[in-house]
Length: 617
Ligand code: GCB
Image 1 (cartoon, protein in one colour):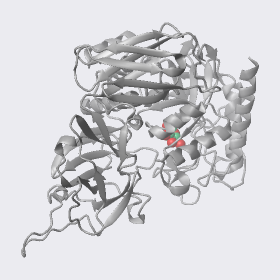
Image 2 (cartoon, helix red, strand yellow):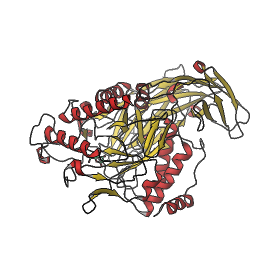
Image 3 (cartoon, rainbow, N blue to C red):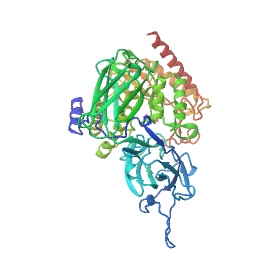
Image 4 (spheres, protein in one colour):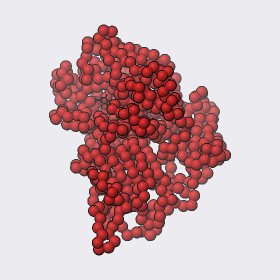
């Protein structure tokens, strides 16, 4: 399909949504009045999905001599939240199915009689004019929430937040909360049936009770205005339509004190000119304390301002050309063989990014937790964040498309105030077809309607070497719609070298910036062998492969950056080799214990040279 046909197909489909029109979870949850529900939760493993027919969410106990129930949350399994279940019990390592989580929310002063060992959180009753929400940072993959026996929420998608209001459903005394989590892979899911990472199940991110006023600021987006580096733009949406209400913006350091009035939909915008603005940049990650207030509520955040743009085949940050020295990691702590979920986990991953000399992370292959995103921003690390449209997606399924749109919306709304995010990724390794082109084109339109201040990117693996022309080429019309084209190319690993790497030329989307978003090969840490033999799985082979690829990249005229695959070895059921893999993808520059392989030094040296080159410019 050609470009104009792609756009026409998109217009015939779902229409673009106006900014702030969506209803994902409230923005900046950590800046609000939160009570953590993290900790041990009671759990029941339910591989045959019998929890619903047996109504275990009612948590009944025998009331007479004849009654009995074949379940109880007390006295059984306890799982840590946030966390995946796979790493908490050996018998759950490969488990894919349903697990029920439960805890009691006890409201008020009178402590009810609860079974011994029950997981309990005392909760202050919402006062008049106060609302209470139950917020999940992420649950992988499907989730149903039951409160006092009633199903109150459902969510699909393992990497984005959702919330449900519970204040008006709580009563004095014991309130029983049950969360049904299911991580079974299905063809209509995103990602779908098979993917190259561990399918960790569970409540994998923070769970919180969030208190807000009756009417509150649900969402906002504060950023540099499109037209000037001295003007800020704020868009706000209240929880309910309310015309003419005032929302105040304060940025003390800039002397900003402005007020906007909302329209009948409860939305409002303002622009404000500032005299002097220190822009955020990787080498100087400057953030401002920002306060938004409305009624009795005031929300604080730390927000940076920067401009990212494309000029021909270059990527500019604040008008300055940058070379993207990127690296990827999964949301995983390899040493623990489990999901990364805490600020300490984020610190571990990002300090290794720093040690490598990278200035960017491609968050593979899904939105990662907010701790990681916020910490990267504080550290001056640019981010590429993407939704898990990863190979094998059913692009002809309208339901799948709805899910993709929801995920994109939830990701963008959660993180668009984070200036570290320079790139929104919409897909990884998809192949041209009419349904794919139409689906992704519409998705891209939706993204741009929510946030036009970032660059949109997708990673392609359909770049091939053409022996006749002696060049690498790609034919994919969808790529033309993107700001930056990214290519995953495993020369020396999945594809043998056709000739000396330094002699290979690239002619791929030559009018656009091109990033190598993945390359690499596998090596087992501490294994030494023939640098010419892939099946040696040796550090020497991986080291040479990296050097060869760097030599080839010098021949890509529109290259704006590289992102080796990957920082750490990661767990993946894709990988069967009994000696060299054992269920691990071994392309890490660092081993599963965090030890540096020889290839790590090749990339570190390259990044150091690039950084010096950039600082001389
Ligand atoms: C890819 C995928 C990535 C895999 C990697 C590999 O192209 O995007 O998710 O892990 O290749 O190691 O094969």
